[in-house]
Image 1 (tube, rainbow, N blue to C red):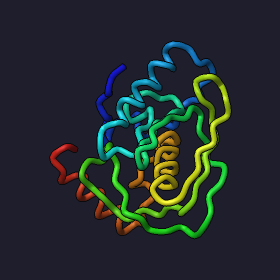
Image 2: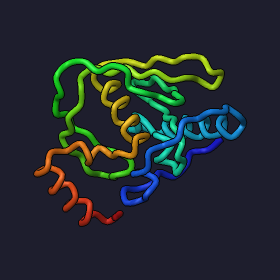
Image 3: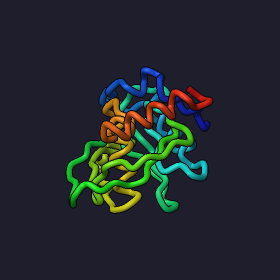
Length: 163
């Protein structure tokens, strides 16, 4: 289908929890195609439906050349101690902050045929799974920052040329 424009921090859709996808029809197939097309651009690890303005529970991922999608994802397991990792977001352009993430995450959902999909991983994959599920819950990574870092992040957002 097509690469869709990314919604930027401040857009209400990014702060709104998504609805489960209950019927897989042509509209949903088109959404998934757009998500996959939108994540293929170099430097993108994931794109949530909210980031393209759709309040439905789905995201695409592109981690180490492995490209795919998941519908109705839920984090079912995390392991390890929270670690501060450098994180950015397409919806918060050009700003990176140390964000607490688990080193391992496992997500379950379905594919377009209704089959169960399990995505899991460590490192960047774990980070992407947590980041994209946050988007679907109405959170952006800035919401995960400690108070002092968030204050600095919000200052930088206000001073950015895109806000």
